[in-house]
Image (tube, rainbow, N blue to C red; front, side, top):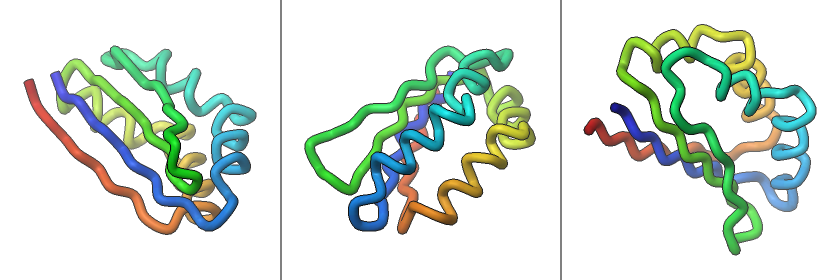
Length: 93
């Protein structure tokens, strides 16, 4: 299994717009529906310009397929608009 902890550092006051864009485009639901996805959950921490994403995948093959999906590309477009930096902590179990 592959666990990803993603930390999005957002432009000032853009967390709500970024998160609402994810929800309105169904990016979260589409990712959860993928074969090999075990978890895809966002968390809103106390830090005002941060959004966390917790992902769990069966294997690298599933994660590689995920990176080719239309909703993955849609998220990339939202990131261009709202995100300053993306930090990813990857652990394989």
